[in-house]
Length: 469
Image (cartoon, rainbow, N blue to C red; front, side, top):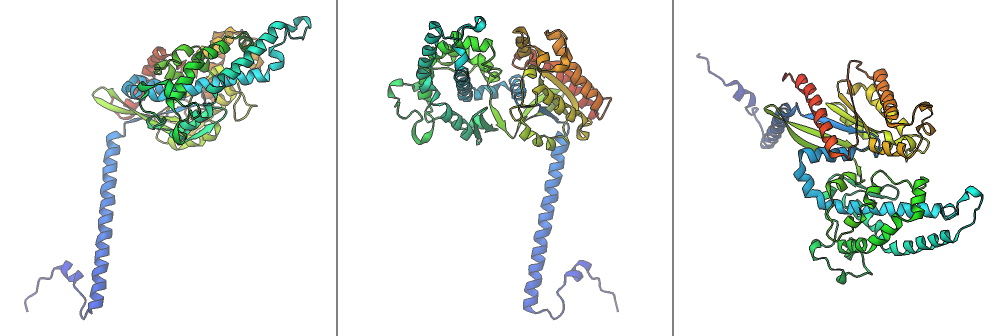
């Protein structure tokens, strides 16, 4: 009897003999379900292949982390990268920085007035060197002048809380009484004002009873009007002899850049004010979470995506650093060496220099960062120079400084030596170089030269690691 060719696949899937209709329907349903599962697996494998292909296409992208404590200059450095590589984006965001300038300005005024309240007994006293603690006629006059200025500035200061809340809600963040609004990435693109066309500003149509506009949205026209009307009073307060005296005695200590804004009151209070690049660089605004910025940079014939991550620096946010360590190519750690006379807001017992040094030491010792290119910015040297010039003694706050000369070169080299020693003793790879730069990241020309040097040194390592040289 001749053999019959049987298709093994057809044989395997043939219906069983004597199959009932109900069993047939169940079998067909199982086959359909199996087919769907198979298709889903195929889709997942296809997506995985595409993801791997994309990863291979971008595996040489440079991932750069900006690390350091809060107010170390990370966000300012990020703006310098943006200004250097994607200036057009910064230009489109320029107008959105106006309320941030305003809130920095308002916090400065509030800080001065609070200091005047706290130092009231001492601020208006006569010269106490001769034992005379009575108030002179001039001191009485000064006190009345300050009181009148407070009254005149009250309308301007009345928008402070609303402006902070508006900024925070625009960025889906929080309003912090001590350090300003906390915003999330992308806040610049969100609408913050009730009126869109500022060019049609007309002070005559503003209702003083409703400065914030309808539904609690701040009215930009009213805000600008208040700044314009209050400019003379702000200037009088800023240059008042009592305020000058408190600043000289260091009873008023403004944050790094806010003195800059007070000196620019005439320009900032202009009805058609638009923030300058310097204004944007000097703005203080806390960002919640991690912000990613991508800058395409040409390396030879290849375009490399420089992915920069600006991570929150307060103690409560440092846990967010760790997930970014594993595949990082480089870290720029910013340590503000001007902060030798300051303490952490989270813990007033900890000197900010000590905190920076401890944090940097932990970065050096982290096994996940063994192969990371490490760059150290000893930042805010302009503020350090100013503090030393006015006679603030480093040894008063850093006892180990001893009797060394209280001059810029000795102080800056002292801090450099301590950070380099921390790297040398704690680095998991003792052959890894540390690239140290003295910086003031608000200085655009110098900072961009440093960025270029840092970029080149990082890319040399990148080219070596990717076997392109």
